[in-house]
Image 1 (cartoon, each protein chain N blue to C red):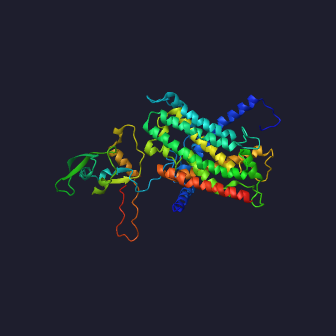
Image 2 (cartoon, rainbow over the protein chains, first blue to last red; image 1 turned 60 degrees about the vertical axis):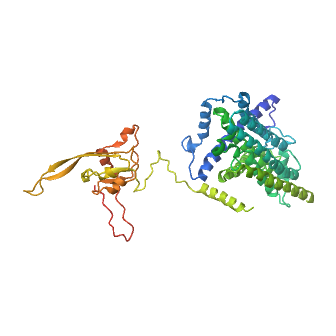
Image 3 (tube, one colour; image 1 turned 30 degrees about the vertical axis):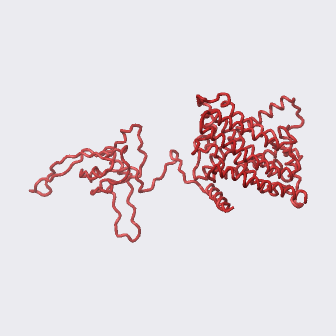
Length: 343
Length: 162
């Protein structure tokens, strides 16, 4: 891990890793929730947002979390109790596993899998099962509608998400997250290598498609048909109260944090800071800071779009995925492959 | 893609709004400055009131309660007959009913009713929102002077009786 001199037993190392990731989800959810959901959204709507709990309302989400903990844990009478109880955990596990392959420094990664990005995209789709479980087991028509809409949407947008990544993978020549970072650090744009070759330049369309698909994966506006409050009152979350609702909330924002991290690894150069070799030990300290800045930048883009656009209709939403994003991402792959061979 | 320019424009709108400073006043910590002619509360100049009942009759909510009695005042000149005058016994406005339309202020022919911008008179009991004539008289201190009309107007601004 961080200090090469310290040798830890396998179980010690694993415990540290698990604790760190378990802390990442609420921490990421809190940061994104406060900075973007509460403050940026308020400023975009000419409001101040929460101001009372803590300085500038910084502790508002903590207070909300404590409030959720005090609530009664209600099961609907006809709900499938086991499935109902497990659904938020399945969503959270998907988020948890996303952090496993997210690198924040040359040595700071839980598991540097050779197929890192493949693993990340694979586990991110586990959340569909959780959402569907929640929708189905709630014994509520709105929840069922929301769950099915979510399933349809998440599956539709999984494809452009995957296909947008393929362009990056072709260019980097590896599926490993660390490999992609190193490839961007060592790359150069027509001989100019001061900033490496962040793929946001060469894969700009891939980046846009990836962000659009992430937006849909997070079921955020303008792709929030599954949870549309004004139509199906929260969709699959409608019957959830207290702690279980909090888990859904943390899952959503934790996933946003993780996806912003994945996007910054794939397109913005991850933890690499220009001017250093990708093997420098100092990057174990600078890397997380640089990574955090990039994550916040990508999250800003995601939430900016979220707070700007109104909701897609269900048919527009499906048409956008199948008729626009998927053909575009296929073209992107084709162009990338041709250019890769040409250069 | 004909929608694309509009989409980008929308992003610009939210971004600019985000950078604009807010005008929100953190009310309990910072007191809001109401505009001078804000309709906060109605003040009563008791000496000007003749208990003519016009305001009570025009009030759409029937929230003004007036009671008065007649009495004979001494004649103005020696040898004259005593004058009949109205004395005001009770003048209550029930702010639980009032809808702040201001018709009573407009209809008063004797300049006894005025708008004041004060708004901090919430109560725990709804019955306490009934302000009697002493309470309404106290609001007179908070009535601001009338502002001058716009340039070129022949009307002179009204005076607030102090």
